[in-house]
Length: 341
Image (cartoon, rainbow, N blue to C red; front, side):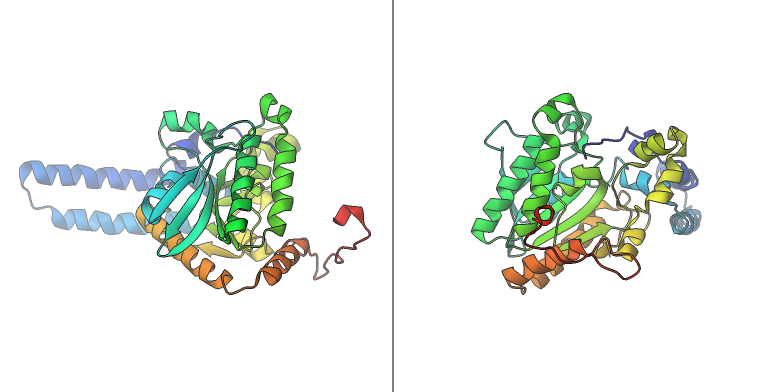
């Protein structure tokens, strides 16, 4: 559950499949600089290159494989939780700490408002600068982060507020200290508790959705994914290391894991896909965040109409039947069976 994949150099910086796009962008930038410095009218050449750029982006992103999408989800320019908070929320009051050990900066929680809708926000926080990423442990939460999240979700239930969760983590932190403080137990307690919360829960995978680290704040009535996010039981690198003892086979593992938004929607693991701008959220962050905002408003309005008893029952059924094979579903739980309680 607490597996955390190693960083991928391409995903952290540039992406190999975008090199033809970057070459055209460099030419456009060069011509624009030339136009400004010499006052030459080369607008027709720039327009032609812009058209070619759009066509190149469309062609490139139309044929992305699973491993390419993983790298898009990890792109260092992709919007992170702090930017969503600053851009789409009208108001945000952060709540700190688990009242037991400390305040894990890899999880941010707080009271939020957007266009009159009030909710509790729970999100993985990766940070943007190198210092922020180190402070946030690159979005890999410790047990105190998951316990903080659960305390705030229970507070939301007491206040009658819906919960919005932003998932963006390569996995929970796998260090010795985290395990000593009960990492697996903290995640398991969150998963169990979220099934019983009597308020709407909206989960949005905005980037990486890795392992139990994602599931610790990922049980919801509606689970949405951004178009180029990924959501998986293990990272492709971890899967390749276990199955083939070869990290070079990470692209094969990515394909086998069925971790893309389209795959997971078809399998019934997620409920919807939030479209991204042409070329991904890292190319037009503001447009991407507006799409997420619209999805939040729509889902909260829809879930607000469902009575609490129906909400909890439907949430249970949703996950209980997720393992259906060939149309056959697991039997409902029996009150006399300890493993179902």
